[in-house]
Image (cartoon, rainbow, N blue to C red; front, side, top):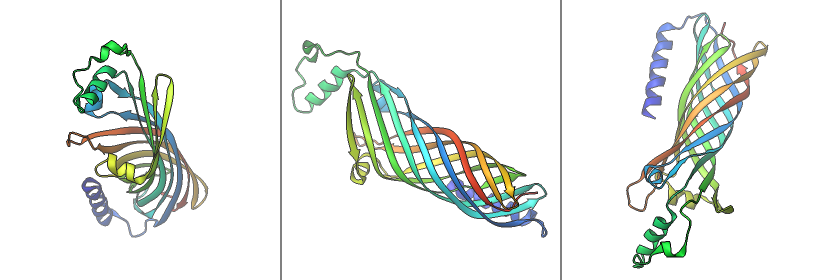
Length: 252
């Protein structure tokens, strides 16, 4: 969040010293629907077990509210607060050494001397873990407007209130519903940070109402609790398309 504050400070100072007294400025409101895919990035310990990236879903219903200040002809800056509902994913897959995992668990109970290989458990087993989280999203998202084209960059937090997790093993699916308590037990802190950028174009229907279309790219930052006490970072890279409606002044 320190970086976001610095960005806003720089933008504010630029506006104060550059804005024309006759430039357009005013209230701005957006409603956007974001639909895309998420690519999960495993923690270091999960990488050591043989896990790698997999794909999931990302979707957001998002409101953005703020003020647009036209700095000069053809260029303006929008200061926006965003609030929305987000469905995010964390998906990984791999072929971990099942025998080593079982041996490690048995060792916790003093049974580490058992030879797991004698049971004929296959070591060529694919495991997929799909986690979905239902989040409240809050952030700051300034936009640089060049006529009808805009570039946004910002970030904030996602507060997961519930979720679902699916483990796919040996062709079988094992599903678990996650409540807020489960999330608190799994993450430290039990919120996700995010950064995001977008590239949008506004098709004005009338003077102050436009349809927005564009693309976005973002990254969710997650800190997983580990039994060793050494928490590890993972995350999800999200990308997709944006459709929305804009109410506000046009930058001329």
